[in-house]
Length: 207
Image: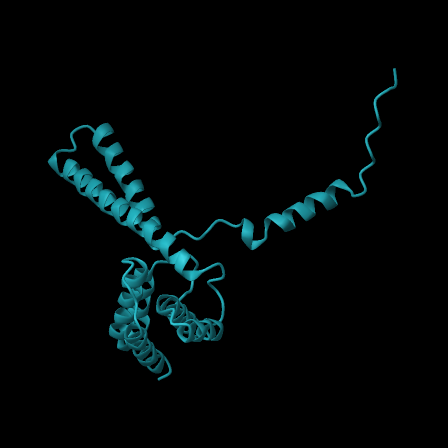
């Protein structure tokens, strides 16, 4: 009966293999996605709720005030959970609207929007115009473009960084939301209205 086969001798030293594995795992595709402000707020509220419950249960005579704190924190957690669940649906829809490469430069998005408009595909054109606007504001340092970030988060961030454009950006965002979240039909005049809002926002960003 033949004996067992000998295993091949490794061609790389263990230290080299470990170093290569660390380099691969350090790549961006293996990093966890950044947690949103809403997720961090929920984490904080859950921690405070745990602290409050521990104080009430183990602290003896805490009284009515302690229970009121627990109830208030419970309500806050419930509100944050509801908002987080809504934003998850929004993230999924926004990711679909963004396409497979949301961090393309604004010029690419505008060129694609032009092609959709030439073919009468107004909804796709509006999506590309929105992506171009976000990319332009990100390039100007007024927004932090992050895959999966909701339209509401972009709106809040721009309101703080460029208040003069908040109203126009809000209107443009609502047009985008109605098309993609509300599945509303988009026509040439809707696209033209969005372009007007976008132009005003970008003009404000250059002042």
